[in-house]
Image (cartoon, rainbow, N blue to C red; front, side):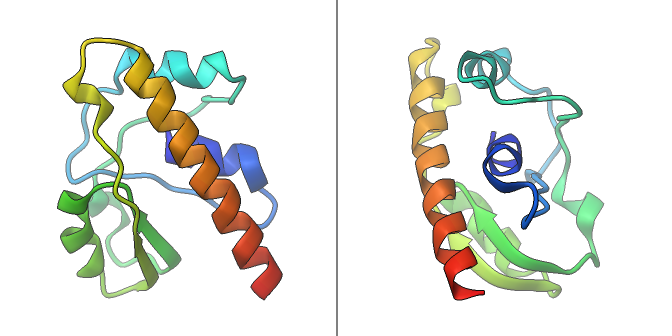
Length: 119
């Protein structure tokens, strides 16, 4: 979700990558939520954080507490931010995915505004 949302918000100034602790199948409700608000999801795939080992990043943003410890150990990361969102996969319904998408999108828009003003 976050990778697609950052690309949608500002793909000119930011290059977005998303990864979890392990690669897994993308939940269809994630894809449906992105489609619902017109965010391009072309090329999205689940990736493990190991895929980016050794790659430098200016920002590493985690979306849940359990992944923040792993991200903070990345020696090539710049600023690490922990954004804790409720995991929508714990529900059987679609609404938690749309809610999470909106919360993440709001935070990304704020991030882009702050970071582009600092530049």
